[in-house]
Every structure is written in C-alpha cells, then in structure tokens.
Image (cartoon, rainbow, N blue to C red; front, top):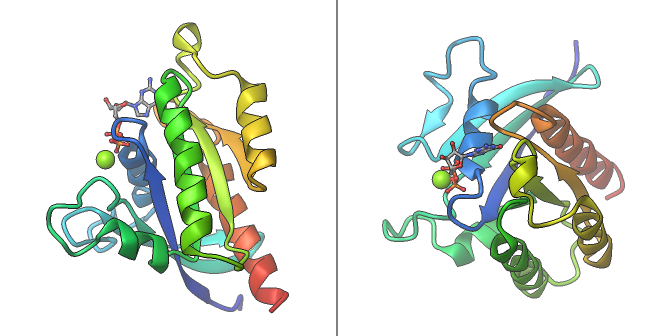
Length: 178
Ligand code: GDP
Ligand code: MG
C-alpha cells in the first residue's frame, strides 16, 4: 500500500477577490464524502488526502489570509505556518499582481534561508478580454522571484489540480532532499 505522507500545510495568499476561496473550494470538493469532514474552523481550513503519482498525501489548505479580524490566523502566523505557499493574483487586476510581488518579498523576509515551495498563480485566465497581466509577465515575475508559475481558472476548473499536484511534488522533493 502507498505510504501516507504529510500532512503538509499549504497557505493561500493574495489580494481579496483574486479567487483564493474558489480554488480552495475545488480542493475541498475532491473528497468522496462530500467534504463534510474536511472543513475545519468555519470553512477556511480544508484537509484532504489525495493521491499524486500513486502516492497518498494529506494536505491542510489554509484560506485564512483575508480573515484577520478573528485573531486565530494573523498574517504573521500564516506566513510562519506554511510548508508551501500559493500566491494568487488575478490576471484581470494588475494591482493584485503587484501585491503578489510584495507578498513574495514579505515571505522571503519572514522565512529567510529556507527553501519553502512557492507557486505564483495567475487566476481567472478564462477572462481573456479583461486581461491586464500577460502570461510572459507572470512567468518573468516567477522566475525573478525563483518560484513556480501557473495560470488557472477556478471558474472553468482549469489547471487547478495541476497546481495542487505540483505543490505536493515540490514538497516531496524537498522532504526527500532533507
Ligand atoms: P478571494 O477573495 O481571493 O477568496 O476570492 P473569491 O474566491 O471569493 O473570488 C472572488 C470573485 O471572483 C468571486 O465572484 C468568484 O466567483 C470570482 N472568481 C474566482 N475565480 C474565478 C475565475 O477563475 N474566473 C472567473 N471568471 N471568476 C472567478
Ligand atoms: Mg476568500
């Protein structure tokens, strides 16, 4: 039987409205048990065991970045808790792209010297007519900041599982090299 790996904690970062919760709900919907047991803490923390490359991985996904008022998940704690980070912007909103760069810098400051997997995600790629950030800009930003890049559409369920599978592969590589 495949060995259970994890749990890994993956944190969603990014501006309000870029689609973090939409991505999280696709992740949460993967469960056969209709997600009843995978939502913890008011639908902001999702746990799933998924199979990637024939091997199980248990992932806790935090969609807590926008809910700072409750005090349980301060931004500082989010940045310290993650084993990996998904920095999301919307391809239709340049300011969210600039914010993504700020977050990458903040993350580097907070997590100096560790090789935490980070993926830069350009979401809403279905909204082609409203595009404000080109694919090549996204890619260049990711390569500048030394992280992976993918464009997704939560609305069309495009590239969402490749995103999560890719994070798990990166986490395994990192774990295997420690
Ligand atoms: P959050 O604030 O980052 O959690 O963003 P939400 O997940 O709440 O999404 C904000 C809005 O964008 C909602 O109206 C979503 O339906 C919409 N949205 C999210 N992802 C996509 C996408 O990939 N394409 C389109 N067209 N709309 C999206
Ligand atoms: Mg949200």
